Image (cartoon, rainbow, N blue to C red; front, side, top):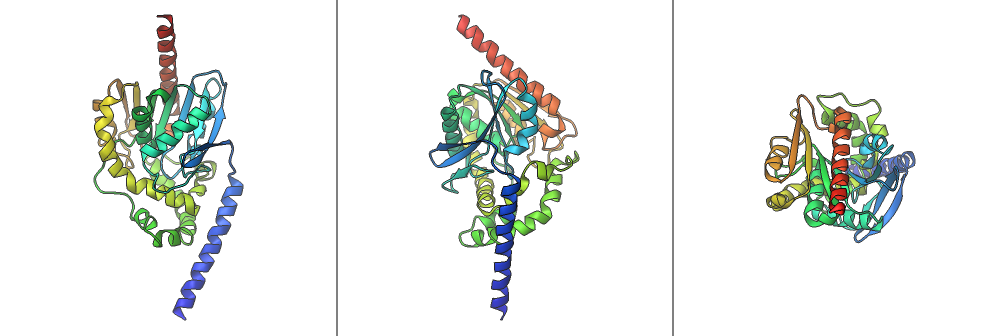
Length: 318
C-alpha cells in the first residue's frame, strides 16, 4: 500500500510538472532565431541597427536572456545588441549535460556568432557568464573587442553550491527529482529566491514573470543548470591561471554587498591579474548590477564600444 501511495504521488507530481512546462512555454515563447552549432542549438535575439558594433549579452546561472533584456532594450536604440540563451538555458539546447563548463559553451557561442556573420563584439557578461566571457577572450580572441563584466565569477571559491544541485546531477535520482518535485517546489520558492539574489536592493515588481524565470523549472533546463553550477568551481581552478593572457580591455562592475558572488574572491583578484582592467566597486550594491546601476552599466558599455571603434579607426588610418 505504501508503495502504491508513493507511486501515485510521483505520478501526480509528474503530471503537475508536465502541465507547468506547457504553461511556462506558452507564456514565454522563443523570441528570436535558432542558430545550429556543434553540440546544440542556440536561441539568439538580435536588436538595434545592423551596421553598429555588436554588443553580445550573456546571462548567468538560473536564468535566460530575458534577465539582460532591460539593458538590451536601452542600448538597442543606438547599438546592435545580440542576446543569447546559454546552451541548455531558455530556448537554447545542448546535446550533452556535460557541456556545462565555460570551455564548450564558449566554443558554441563563438560558432553562433560566426553563423551570424559578426566580427569582434563587446561582450557583456553577468555572474556565471563572467567565466564564460573570459574563456571566449582566451580561446576565441578574434570574437572579442572588450569585456564588460557584471559581478563575474572568475575563481574557485570555498565550499560548493546548494545541495539540491548535487542531487539533481546524480544518475537516476536526478531525473526523477527534476520530473516530479522540482517544478512545484520551485514555483513556491521562485519569488523568495529571486529576492535573495537582488538583496540588499529590492527585487523589481513582476521580475519573476518578466524575466521568464519559470522556464528554469523545466526538467531539462533545471538539470542543465545544476550541471553548470556543480562543475564550475573545478573549471575555474583550471582556467584562472590563464587570465594574465587576456589582452582585451576589461571593465568589471561589482557590489561590495554581493552575497552571491563575492567581489573579494572574484572581481578584485581578476582586476589585479588581467591586463588592461578597470574595476568599479559600488557601495551597498548586491549581485544584480544591471538592475541596481543601469545608467552606469550602459555608460561603461558605450565607453567600451567607443574605445573599440576609435582604436579600429586609428589602426585603419595607419
